[in-house]
Image 1 (cartoon, helix red, strand yellow):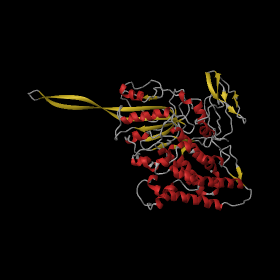
Image 2 (cartoon, one colour; image 1 turned 135 degrees about the vertical axis):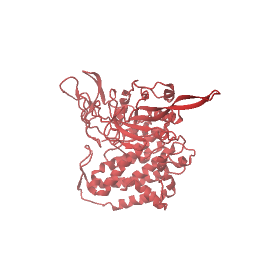
Image 3 (spheres, helix red, strand yellow; image 1 turned 90 degrees about the horizontal axis):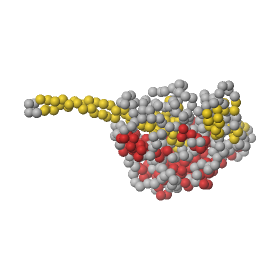
Image 4 (tube, helix red, strand yellow; image 1 turned 180 degrees about the vertical axis):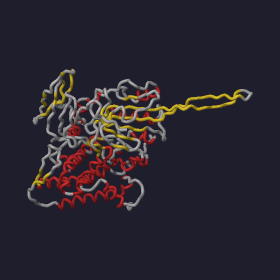
Length: 545
């Protein structure tokens, strides 16, 4: 069921991740008590997991019809993803919420051994603990947990039983009510709603490169941003592994890296859904994670956080493959051919291809060297037009400058191939820790002027903080006819915040935020409230522009 958002309260404009985290915008979302479950059997596991009732709600409908996802949220546009038992929606919050920004809502149909689990089942307890793990995670390259809910439906069935009573053979009929959970769903609301995942992003780059030089030039900004994702993702995983967080992602793959409207890569889906989707809570991988699963997970042997490093290395291998002009599937296809398994039936697994990994690494190195040799030594300084750059990026670039960038990119790929090989080592003791990865891929930030280095990742490398300890404020509190409200500040070229207002007639104020646009997918987002931001064009904050 698709729910239109036209009748819901107007949503506020999207915020950049760093602004979203620093202003604690997610704290504005709180569940009310209407229709809340009160039985101890359902609430005790929530309390044991440490989840706040303000953030996690178990609905009770007195055996009436259960919620139809994405209810109680309000759907915006088409679904973002659908894997059968899990659907991801772009939504607005429920009407009446103080929180008004768009969200991504992941709805999981809960099953344990093909049936909905009970309130005290182990898989439910494990899933609630995974949700709690998300609560404290605050990193500019990891999605933010905002709220969660559960809903279930009970079917009542009368069972007739007969038995003989007494010696006369009289029969008595008894009726008992058999209650069974018919359906159980878990919903997790996260910020931000993604524009696409990394798989789609890489496919778009490969498709553009395959069509024509003109198309490739138009999508050149995507290539520029892809170079920066190595360092940003490495720092996100490093943050999860640090001693004060201690979380293993367990399911790193391109589909679990999402790209927001500012071009930021963000990790999502901490292996949460696999408990409910399969009913398994062992340390082994589920069917959908086999391709990127580490060897120790496949063999269910001892492991540590470097299992995530293996999976991240697989993703990085596909990323460098795309930087060399091939689709991400080229890595899988080439490794299959090298192993003589091109016609093999079954899912490809990088773990099974490790014997041929070095040959593929050598193949990529030869590809990069051949492309370097093919670059012209001298070319006319002729501008290369582009029509699809983000607004803050130059609309033309000299041929020589483009050639220099291409040379730096190819040299950078050659430089990191050996590090990716180490990340995918069969023995996890030989793999680097996530905290050691960022310096190995840092040079990719310097190839292009835009977007440049990620200030947050640089700060994390220097201080082990996930974001700068101090930050120029981007929000201000003002009074209007409806009380006090936080509004965005405008940034000038000197980065000094200023406040701009325009009269609208009637009560309230009209706040306009105008800065240099660099939103990759959404240059403008209009809101419908006179006290909301109505023109948002925000730079890739955290990346120098």
